[in-house]
Image (cartoon, rainbow, N blue to C red):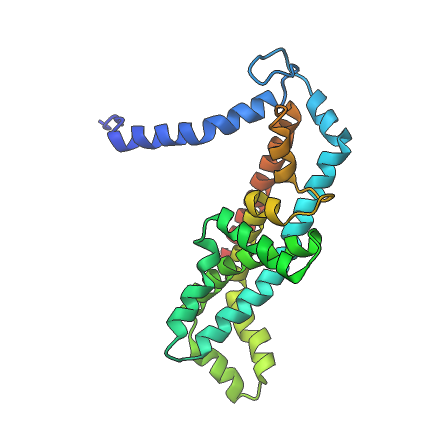
Length: 260
């Protein structure tokens, strides 16, 4: 006879953690279809808040600003972080460890301190607050994520592969694009995804370096909290959640296809 499965403490603990983690998300999704404006009273099923979301020009513009800011920041951070990791892997000097430690400081400092530093620095340079300051600030704190990902990937790459390409006549640039870049590309993409998520989610630093006429989605939601968050935000969160799930499923399918 097969033994009946019993609920053990680790299983119950895992179920409790999962419930606490995903229950608020489920509530947001459910109340995005609520006909009532009150976030605590269920009045009936309705799609009115999705219609209101797409009619809200200011909120949609803030969403476009956040997406554009995240993409541009990730692009610059990917180039700088990748080249920095490759450069640090190929040099050897006494202060190398200190330089690697300094390169990760932006992700260890509290955001409010980093935001104040950026604001003082940009004010000293007399840069107009807006797109320029936002891109510089977001690129700066996105670089360490890509740098650490690529650095970890480079540790597991056999250096003799690139050396063999050089011995066969490939130039340093050709060896990089044909050998090194394809090997570290998964790490670069992983770092870009993480950096985009951090940029898209940032509130504190963006408030310090943002201009008076520019608004990102987190700042827009934060300012609306003073008057109360409408169910439009629930609808927007649901759409973003569905997009993330779709991207994860697509990525998993592509990975399984490549493995097969």
